[in-house]
Image (cartoon, rainbow, N blue to C red):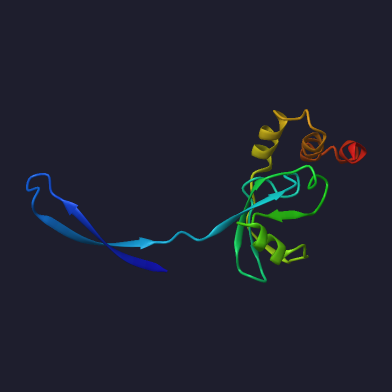
Length: 133
């Protein structure tokens, strides 16, 4: 949706004269933030919730998500979070993130078990990852 705004600019050569410009501003699509296991949904993955049409980008991970097919959605406040609750939703992947970029980032933070698990899975070492629990 385009929105038109009027903006006033002053000319440097004639400071007393105002010039009005109509500027069309295109609103970027609203993309929410999500957290997931980066070995399943790499950082940068963009998906749409089919039930709402809302788009989200995987930008974070968490210990409770490691080794699970779970995605946490960022909500602006406690009320929205409680209203949404926990549910199973169908998603459509719009753009896959880069597993190699996720791996490179996570390799620097392997001191934590949940991160080590994601690294092992991204490296194709699923048995070792599963043994970490």
